Amino acid sequence: MDKIAVDKGSVRETLVIPLYARHVLAQRWPELYDGVDTGSIVSRVDYDFSDQARLMDSAFGKFGALEVAQREYDLCEEARSYLAVHPNAAVVNLGAGLLDVFSRVDNGSAHGYNLDFPDVIAVRDQLLPAATREQNIPCDLNDFAWFDQIDATDGAVFVAAGVFYYFTTEQLKTLLTAMAQRFPGGVVAFDAVNSIGLKLMAKTVLQETGMDDIGAYFSVSDAPRELAPWSDHFASVTAKSYMNGYRPLGLRYGLLNALLAWLSDHLVHMSIVRVAFT
Image 1 (spheres, rainbow, N blue to C red):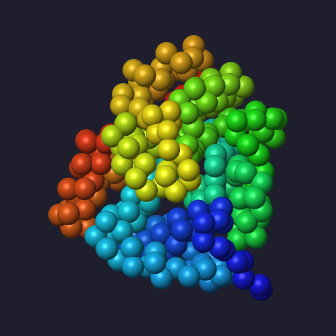
Image 2 (spheres, rainbow, N blue to C red):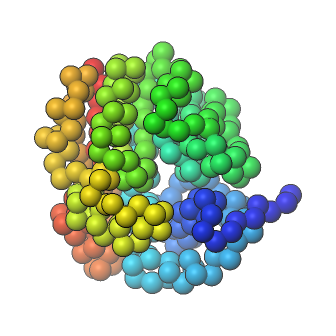
Image 3 (tube, one colour):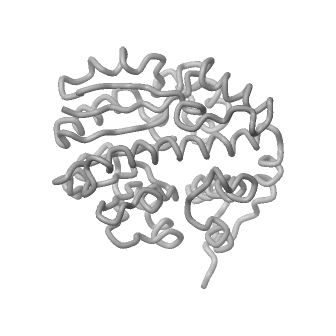
């Protein structure tokens, strides 16, 4: 099977670097990772991961792997919680990249959708093709034509991992209010940080994507208070600690990681925001 070439600075690179982080995570702390076989996927990628290997071996790189583990676990827990009540629901992965949410939460009767830009879905189709009861859908999330491709007859739970930081606040408000009207009884869960956290991200990830006007992009300090007024179709808005709210790390992974996790939750308000629709 031919390898997939990935150039530095390309869209594909933004996909395979998080994939490699999951690969390192699966090797270092397998008890924290229950996703696809990352090793087999990484082996199909023609890319020099040496820089990422050095980064992931640093103290902050290791904490970054824990962040990946916790965020993905948290969002999967939100999906599982919804499926416990709506077993035939749609599980919709917004801005999916190469994240395998549906395979982790599949109960045998739900159906999954992975949405992202066409060039991203083209790579996903090669490295992580859709399974039974699953579809990979190329689209722009801000073009609501994708609503028509989601069968939410039996409910829908939407998850977005590391996606909404790239939306302006107004774009996200427009998207979530439209979703609330179109998918009554649904739920959306996503990760968020406050303005301090967004500025810290600006020094790395966001600047690499050319997003310099950080003040315009989405951050939130108190999601229930700030987001609830957006729509009368929001039944509830809650926020839960990102690093320790679903699966507390404690001191099992070292004092430094415990301290960084506490700072992440309390200084930059890393949280999982859950919006339920009426």
